[in-house]
Length: 506
Image (cartoon, rainbow, N blue to C red; front, side, top):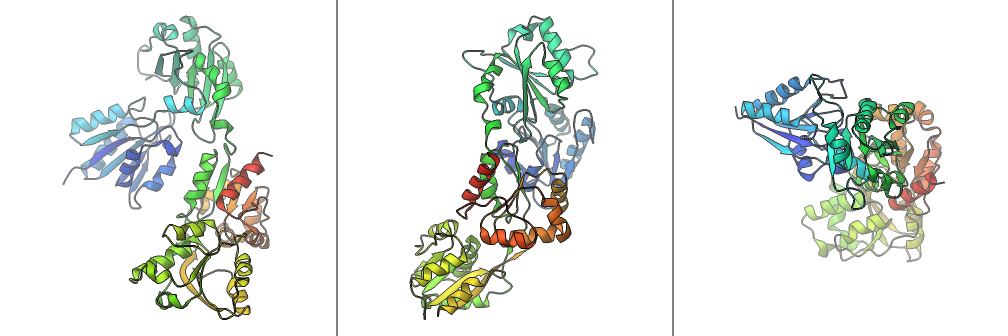
């Protein structure tokens, strides 16, 4: 049997955006993923569906497997011909024991590759607004373990050298030994007035930064009951935090916001929330799938030149209809007959991406406004095609028909409730660990209620801000006992995010 390969991957300090491109590429081809406590579980969404996922703990002194057992495990999986992704927090070769794992693989002749990660020693201070070096303060920095191997007979840290010989000291895994660290530094000549920062859960929404002096930081940490994971930073550069603290000042910093859009469409909203310091908790309440058959769509596609208007009420409508349209061998020239209407800017953008002219976008992004706009154009005798989801409001085709239009509605996609994740989200809501819920369509609300349970939905969401993209979505929520707290004036994702920011900054 051909031997597999092991990738020792640094997952970065916690923020999922800080893993390297190569690290993600290795995860995407892995047969087995062996991951630690400090490796963000969000990365597992990049792993192939059939891949084996093995959690090995390594939280302080509490290890699911010992280091020797981990070494044996990754070697055993590789010997079976598997591609193994060994995912470690930070960088595997900086206090990550990746060197020991690499030695074991080298001894056994198993191919391996090291994929460096962004070490927390650099990233966490940066997220706290503290540069490790600065012309006005220091040109030297040292990374030091705050938790040496307990089997060592004596410390290998040269306290007399680092206490006064290095400007910035970064201690990892040392908060439980903080009194000893501070005492050793002062005993060996470091000024007791030296600024110190303790940064817990750095780069994550839970990030907490405490500052003090070397002489008092131990008492401060004890009074605030600071627990790992913590980076200890000693040096004059800590003073710069007062005006460089960018991350903790982001408008949505630390806010965990439930995103209920489909998995395919969640990324836009999630990314906007992340940029503002928020934490998107993706809980897809909609899965978009193909229609049961294409007969009606195919018939209308071949007759497209006979229509006066084609109305698209979603980005999905554009995607699924035009995908089928081009699959049938039709091309852009066959779209020159009808005028095109889009319900909002995102839908219009999807059409313009294909170099198609959009003739009408209503000022309010809802079906009623489409009707009002087209009525001014004259509808009697006009032939209208609406490619949309199977489950959608009928108000638009009904109003168009009342105005004398000849309307064909074709199902180009279906929305169904996806399976999974309910238990995780239920627990987060029950613990009041969610800062706000977002709903971007009526079906996201109704499916959310169905998924968590009609009886529990009101109880779980009580007191939590509800952000609905528009009045139709808000009305659906109200009918199900979920009152909207936040609603933008413009019914778009960017406006929804702005409304969330305004709400939390009050």
